[in-house]
Length: 409
Figure 1 (tube, one colour):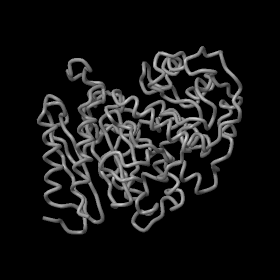
Figure 2 (tube, one colour):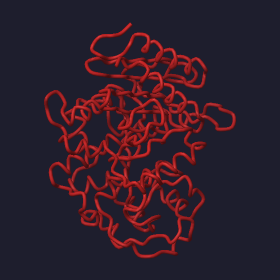
Figure 3 (cartoon, one colour):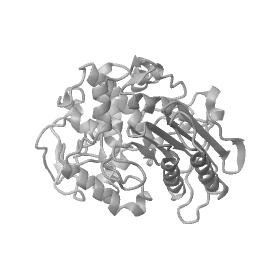
Figure 4 (cartoon, helix red, strand yellow):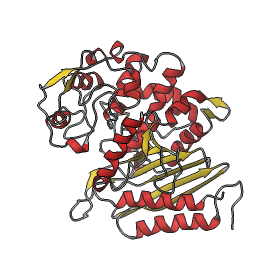
């Protein structure tokens, strides 16, 4: 009952399909597209429809809002600049982003914004790339003055207003104190958006044009970008944010005339990409191949290793681990990996079926993308049901549970 190429067992692939089908037939997931690849074998499942009320079927070429699974991909722009010595890890970020010079730091995370001390040192490129520069989305600090200011200034995606263009976004960011000292703690999301502003300043190009020229183009990622052009909009499903109390489906973003139907003012490296399973497969296969794609080098092997191994100190890793485990009721169990590389989670302990060293990330729109070198495996599962309810998180969990059973060791 084994398939060729040292890939997956037939029985295991059937189980993957059965589990995904069960989630769709429950009525809680309108549709899903999943891909697993190993060696020369790629297996794709497209199940269900693009809308909760029916409509066109999901297809292999369906375009999804990748949400936070954008982070591992947009980090490649910084990796290119590291390879070319246009950035160095311990350069001061204020060389390109003077708005972030002379930082102040809150005395306590829930304190008033003017109760600060000077930063002990400037922010470095390393701090930004490892998400330790001092600011981030902290679910444990919701309701605090600093989190309120982040949201009110439009520094996060569409909460409650669209993000401004990059220079204005950075100006607003520069008016806020840091939550923690530079390099002290891992903090989620904002560093990934800051990355895009940094890349644009260093290269003199827009973040998207640089990614397209140096990453998307060479990898053949023709359906990846920060918006969906009109001629492809019929391939973009509605994005749902079900009511947390009743489970009733609410459309958070339509395809036609929605947020991704036109170029954004702010191309968000933290969660702005749209893509397909095959485009993402090309990217993660390149990482597993040490930066090579079709015999051509996209990234160096050392920078890929830098991206996909844990970059946090033991103290930072312990804090990140605690953050995930103590807030499992908010994350529905996602995020329990331990470590963080550059743009990706990196598993530092065996907490489920996946091995230590697996790298990738999940997205709040119901997306999940990971790879691991031990098995030469890439897995991608995409829905458009937001994690206001646990349904897509449970589908993601079950997908990975069955994928690792399907591996033909």
